[in-house]
Image 1 (cartoon, helix red, strand yellow):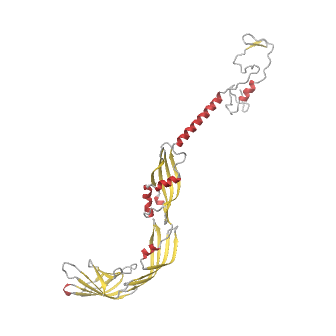
Image 2: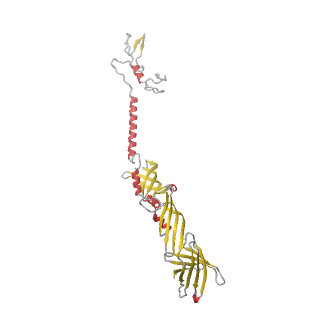
Image 3: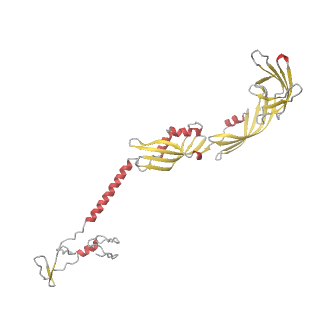
Amino acid sequence: MFCPKCGSQNQDFAFFCYSCGTPLEVIHAEQLVQPIQQPSSQPVSSTGQMYQSGVYQSMSPEMPAQLMQPGQHIQTPKKHTGKIIGLAAMVLAVIIVVIIIVSTIGGQSGPEKNKIISDLAASKDFHAVMNPLFAGDSGYSIQELAVVLEQKNQQNKTDHLQCKITLADSKIKCTTDFNLDYSYYDKGGWILDSATPVNKEKWKSIPLKGVDEETIKSVIQYDSFKIVNHKTDLVNGKDEFVVNVVTNSDMYSESGTVNLNFVFSGNMWILASSDKKTTINYKIIGKWQGMYDYGDGLVPDNYTINITKADSQGNIKADIIISYDENKTDTFHITGVLHDTDNKLSFDIMAPSDATHTQFTGILTIDTSNNQLVLKEDNRNYYVYLTRK
């Protein structure tokens, strides 16, 4: 049989062309229902042979077309239809099996977002990492959670998630990365096995508010202050202040302006630099007395310091009289300057050597909390505390 579309030769009872796939059943039907010629007057032998043109022709089953009896219907072979039905049944069975397997491990999706957030809120591993970022304050919560990567193992009933998690409290907002590992249990569903931080060097904390007044007060330590200028850049973690300050005590008074520059580092504001433009009025001019007691029945050393000059730049002059045992007395004429320009309460003092004394050096400090002066000689390993007389 030849295909009417492409002309390829096929087996006589093929239903589709092996070359182009054209259905051939129509051709069979047309061949089978061709008009049957009326039997001729030629006789038919008793052996089933028909006499035609002087020769008996065979009517065996090998003939390509069977003669039909009147009223007989064409029977189309059904073997290919059975194969198609069987294949469809197999496909349906596979689909059902897949659905059953998938349904036993939580469906096509892993743990839902709300469950992940709830699991992290209860995870000790998660909080052990996050608590230090929020200075030990447990008042933070998850604001956003996005699954960046998911790797599910259907056979082992596990789900590996890489998540980007944003947390915040009232002061700080922090974006983090975590690897979460889940296992599925028939009676418990998805259970969080571990929460491991990743890419910590890329985590970023952003302050939600600037430096408060309590922090400023703890840094500058003046009796009173007033903010006269303030500039905050939360995105870049910078906070700048210009502050008027005033301090007044029995030992000194100070007033002026302080510039404070804070930066946000880690999880807190840190004072990066300060610039003071203040004026100090020292109130230490006069006589101060004190002694150092050696104990063990030894005669103590008595000190008298008479300060004659203490200006706002930290320059001082004084006479120091030290009485030793057996009524020996040494007198030193002292000059001094600020020990540290940032710390305006300590002075480096010195008396040059002369024919009687070696050089006298030390540090004289104003102790405002106790309203006293503290003397530390460089060649003596003790302090002398002096009060005003």
